Amino acid sequence: MSFPRLTFPQLWVALAILLPVLAALLASMSTVDLAYQVQAGRLMLDQGTILRTDPFAFTTGGAAWLNQQWGAQILLGLGYRVGSWAGLAVLRAVLVALTMALVLIACRRQGAGLRVAAWLTIGSLVLAAVAMGLRPQLFGMVLFAATLAILAGRDRQPRAVWLIPLLVIPWASLHGSFVFAPAAVGIAGLEDELARRPGAHRLLLVAIAAALASLINPFGIGVWSYAIGLTTNATIRSLISEWQPTAPLSATGLLLYGSMIVFGAIIVVQARGRPWRDWLRESGPTVLWLVFLGVIAIQAQRGIAWWALAAPVAVAGVIGRASARSDVAGSGGQTPNRPQRASAINGAIVIVLAMVGVLLLLPLRGGSALMGPPGLLTDAPEGVTAALVGKVSSTDRIWNAQAWGSWFEFALPGVPVAVDSRIEVIPADAWADHVALSAGLSDWESILDRWEVSVVVASRTEQARLIPLMETSPRWIVLYEDIDGVIFGRR
Image (cartoon, rainbow, N blue to C red; front, top):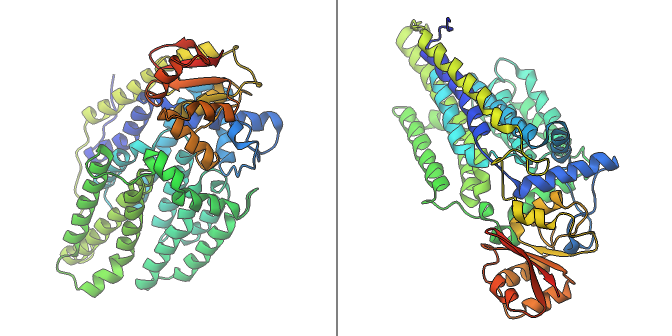
């Protein structure tokens, strides 16, 4: 068997695409956000209309729901219909690979060589891995990376920037990150204006068009209030860890702050010996862009995704401009061609990794229709779910662990739950009651009475203080228990 002969830079490029695919196929999928998104998509496909009122939680009383992510939900619902959970796992791998491929293209268009562009792309994967679960944000990451790639190639294809407003139209119905499109175009326009490149005014018009394009959706300007409101919602920031500031000593924090130090050092090194005014005119917008994204990533772990994609591309531009200056200074504008040795070993590595990817598809077969292949889903308590299926109905009210709310909305369709991962939809008083219940405060029984709760599904971690109180209460009986949690019913 003969293998294709690849150079080392070509090998790195292949690794930059294959490694994300392998990582995505190896990783499990959390149901905390995903399950309700899939169920919402299935409901919309069945009903033929966009969900505008909450169909899931009894605590909302069927209130209006600004369902900005309806487009992603329909795509996820379609994916589930076509291939169940295994099909969604493959979809995630495709989206991750596409995102990384676009980052690689953007780095190359910024002037980085094959090897450096591949290294930066792999670095982007490492930084973004924590944010690459299958949920609407992943669709937004694909479109954000596409925006970066288009802007990076604007010198050679200046009219392609008009594709960005077209991307924003579906983006505004997929994920709230569409707000980054006008910002990215604006930074590119500032860069061109300071560098006195043609097309700066065009980019200003594109930024305006992108902002206007975001209004082409069923909720109009409401999608902006949704996107901005999430970042300022006090309940979200207090309850959800990924919306809290990134701790420097956490695993994600070490990667984030470490990348800031590395990227900052690269910028400083490339600036040595240059007049500060020239450097400021050339790299000032890049630094401004990095500071903007860095602040977002520091303020909330959820924001690391955008830093992870954009920062390597921005640094690729700094490296590319420095390399171009070096080539001009050293060879009178002629870049020497260094021959690269091609090796069949490099080709064999790529073939083996591709075969590993195919083999990783095998574990995605089998399993139950509800739970999917063994080990694929997390945050889906199998025993607790089995004990509830067929035992509860639409007339029950389940007070549940927040991490399980999304899953129950999928696994127990039509059965109302108390809370789920849509922090902005559930009323603040319901969240206050949920916190009080989980903590086992003295008024826990009156809270359950007030909400007319018939079933409590308590997690051994989230409701550890509540469980012993309910076990000793004469008004509640244990219906089921296992290592994950306890189901209580009224006597």
